[in-house]
Image (tube, rainbow, N blue to C red):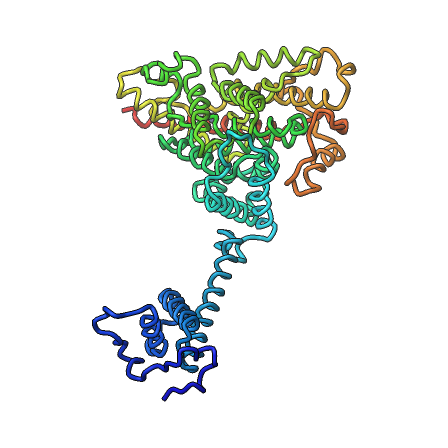
Length: 565
Ligand SMILES: [Zn+2]
């Protein structure tokens, strides 16, 4: 039974109590024709007593029901309709539970939002340092970089940016734990095993590692998302024709070798961040979408690219052009924050470097550099970097035998495949492309002796001349400069322990992760001798091929004797 003493006086202005029968059937006025707002509220009040089968407070349905009941209570208060105390308490209690559940849920959501997709990373999978780096990259790129009004946002979305960051982190984490990557500063870096442990993605790993090592994405405001996308596209471009040799492993190899040369020689100090970046990108793109066939094959078969580039540096033009066309697309645009001047310089350097990898310009390039070496003037950066890239491109005979041998096998296989294509097309078989008649050992001896060795001699001399120009004023630069040396007759003296330590010091003192600010005005120790680790390997490999050639010859002679009747 209800009575007025159960409810506070505020409910009593209309001295009407709620009929017990109305509480449960809800049928006040069947016809509804005479219903007043008061009747409707009074009817709604009866629902407050219905406590069975209420949805759980943390469910979505509870939100709607709770707000309806709260409105009923307010309306009843306004109209002085009596509500039973226990119904009032039970309903207010239920509504309070709903609000608490909403609050908890919302707090959790906000926390997750703050953390973003970073929360997807397993706590023990990413070092704190990397997390900090991610957060720093994200914040800087979103708020502190001045953006021109016409520029599009750096990242398409927060989620996308963070996803890219997570990928970078995964790369870095794997890189940091793998001992193989510790040799990235070494001439003997084994790109094949790195390719294996990165599941065939060594180009993007080496690319990211080097960019990060010099903090280039941050310094040059390069979108991590775009860089990630760009490197992925590079890898797929290199995989397009399934080349045994001109594939993403070769690109990663040339990238690391280029880096090793400028790191080891100290040429790094001659380059600003934009030039270093251009050097890396040139190495990365230098054989992009290589068809596994030579320029001559394109010219002879009158391919589309040969027609586009009028038979001149056909593939090299394609590599660099295709890469720049890719960078024009927002998703792959790693240059979006470059000023027009920076873009112009970057483009000039990359074009110069990649076009100079055209083997047909090899002798002209060496001749030009030799004459520059004999003059007192400083060497033009684009020419110097172009020779470094070209040398790195043909460097495998200067690497340890196992690495060099693998490259030789791959290159020969690619040549033989071209030979087969030429046969199919009725074209004459190109030199070294006949699977049945090529003397592999002999070809390598010639390659080392006439191409690789002379290139590395000139490049080594060039590096020394540049170093000299960095360490002494131009006026003191001797003229004519260092004469080109022959590896066989006068190998470079090994660096003194002191100078070798000095040359590594600036990289080692901070784990090689960060270099000293580079500029031409940076005072440098008087280091003018460049370590030339390739000399020994070229010599060893050549001797090995000579032995192989003798055996090859013996095998052939035996075969001839066996075949005689
Ligand atoms: Zn190449």
